[in-house]
Image 1: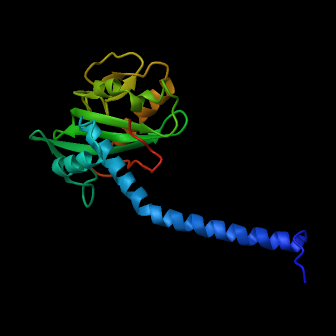
Image 2 (image 1 turned 30 degrees about the horizontal axis):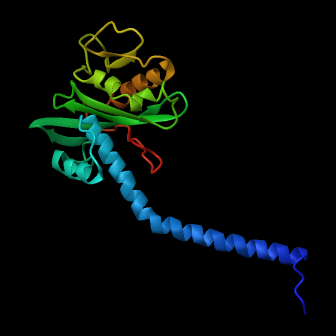
Image 3 (image 1 turned 135 degrees about the horizontal axis):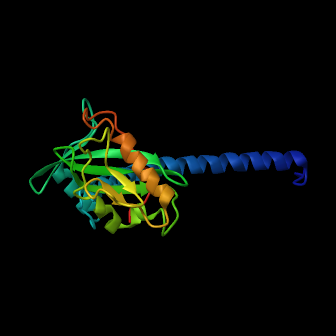
Length: 216
């Protein structure tokens, strides 16, 4: 009996079998690549932490080695921060997570062990506009404006560190990114929200980093 390939039943069965085979192959490839993807995600996080410590321009192996050298303990138990020693200085790195103009923003802020003076920062984003809001990630020069800023100020309740369009207090304020007011406001709100537990050193905003994130 000759198989009728124009029959509707044949077409449906053939399509179903093809879909099952393709789904199986995709699942197999995903599982095979997952350990590599997980490793890349973990390395990406380590690089972001190093960036917040003003340690940049390292390849994968160099970043792994430097991270192992400077990071003495990771979040867990009582405290939700990374305890680091850089050039003989004790530094605490706190995770950040917030919302920008078009999507989530995240990052890390490194503070001297007084938990009041900024050692360095690194910010990331999901989908901010290139050349505008994306500058929170792409502009090292802008990130370096945070260095030396104070988190608290006498007479100010809560977190004084902020991003503003016009700086009136050079100790606690950073110039907003030109043309990216809403993204800059998102960074400022992220700092306010995520650092409010600073004195207790607990309950910080952990950023979600995926294999689609990239560091520049």
